[in-house]
Image (tube, rainbow, N blue to C red; front, side, top):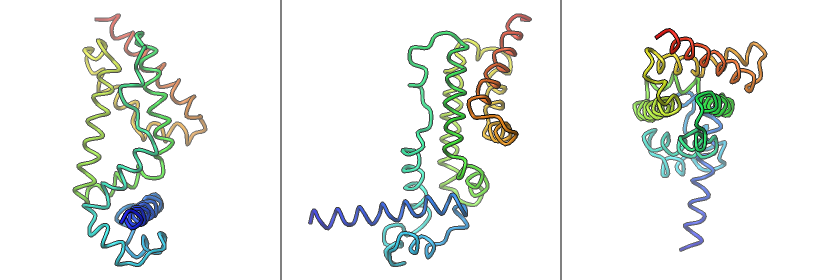
Length: 191
């Protein structure tokens, strides 16, 4: 029985790996169960047995991919007390995460409108990001529009635009950190 359970887990892993790779190439909606079966080198019925619908497949893929891509969480701020350190660390970690998730993010943003389970997962991630930004800003979050500005300037599209124009992820993070700190400092000085 143990050998059978291990084989079952291995088959499931191959299916999830195949789906994750295909979702990066084609998006969730562009990936069919036959595509997944072929890539995983399993029978079509095996894919359906493990994942009868997107409601089972999408959470399995997003959970596994989160383990691989490591989204930033509150632990990135441990030991950092100065606002510039906190904001710099947050932006650096978030932009590095964007670099790791770049193949999936644009397609997921489109597919979420047609796949409720994906929309729910992405909405939870957005809420977690907002909470992390609030924690990162600390007392500065009370500044008018500080949260909105930080979220806008650290959006995936900003990272993509800056890196597409030739900046490294690290240089883009430094630029956005400087912009945020300059604005927040100016805003606090004028209040």
